[in-house]
Image (spheres, rainbow, N blue to C red):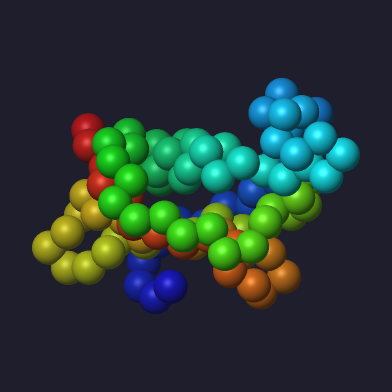
Length: 103
């Protein structure tokens, strides 16, 4: 992702309650938890709330307690409320997409 943006570390604790039912014995961080992290990062970066998920692609799993990087960037000039997100682990893209923010 290019341009100005926001970046933060992401790690979902192995004791998170959503993990118990998301493949017992082989837990994966659910996509909805990753989107929640996008929403929290958007609030931290711009003080905005996530209004809509326009696109989301989950290409590889994030495991519990696995460190990742979450990046946010404006989707383009003239679109300050459209934000691209990307979640990476060890250089590989785990998830990416486009969200719309609101005040």
